[in-house]
Image (cartoon, rainbow, N blue to C red; front, top):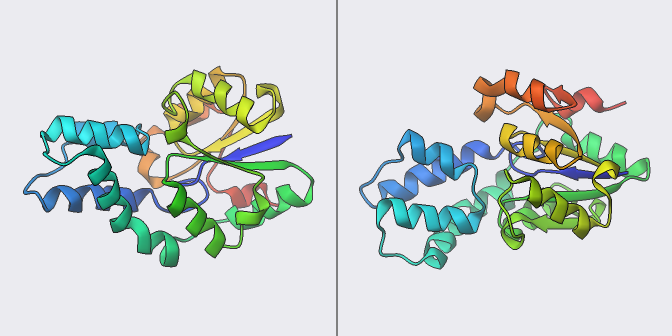
Length: 210
């Protein structure tokens, strides 16, 4: 089996970081995030988030400049501070020991993802690192997971996908992957939805460690 893990909010406790980055980025420009913006940007890849932000706030910056600023703001957190969520390290190591093929599928920037996984001692356990910004579709689109399975060399029925986002979990399930939802405080209000769309829903990956 191929086990595919989201990073932010699933393996690492970093969803809150991006909310802080978004708020600080806009404060620097005398702006504030609206509830609609906060909701939409969580569904975006890094590239589409930059395009969305530029369009909604009519910013003079290029999307590339926005992404560079966000990445610089988040860099120290990923390289020095970002913690694993409860049970994440133990469960990933357990899956590797059992011979499963492991992959990360994330909307995080490649440099930040690699830095965090390396510091946490997990990078070498993953056979595949797939970045959503390199695919043709957003993570909430089922076609994204068909493309993902092709990249990791497995059929959807041979894959187990772990994520904290109800939208991503629903899309992966629709594409035919087995889905394990992982609780994150950012989506606390949508736990019933997670239970409905996921084959299994856990409060932490520690529940899966044997």
